[in-house]
Image 1 (spheres, one colour):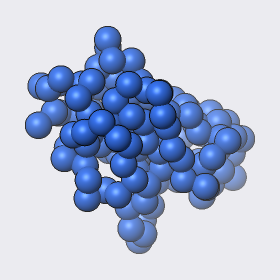
Image 2 (cartoon, one colour):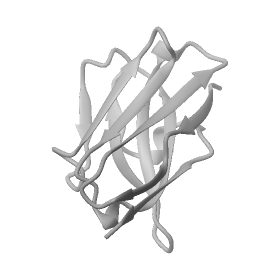
Image 3 (cartoon, helix red, strand yellow):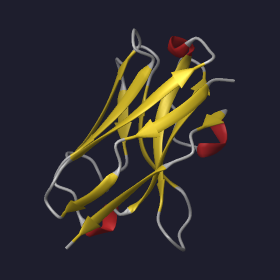
Length: 124
C-alpha cells in the first residue's frame, strides 16, 4: 500500500483560498486514482473530489464544484486540492486517499490507503 501525507491546511477567512497537498510514497503513484474526502465534527466522512490515475478525468461533489480543483503531478507523486471561495461549511479535517485501479472512485470503501488528515478551518 502507498503511504500518504497531507499538508497545507490552516485557518482562513471566508472567501479565501487554500491549497492542500498530499505526498505519496511506497508505491507506484500512477497506478492509483486519488481522492479527497472531508469529515466535519459530528458528521460522517464525505467525498470531495477524485482524479483518475492519468489526471484526464476529475469528479467533484456538488457542494464544491466550481470552487475546488483537484490535480496531480505523477512525476512528484503528489495530488493537490486547490480550494477557492471557501465557506465556513467547508471546515473539516481533509483526507487524501488512494484507490488501486484505472477509473475514478467516489465511494470511500474503494480506497485502499488514507492519510492522517489536515485541518481546514474557515472563519466567517
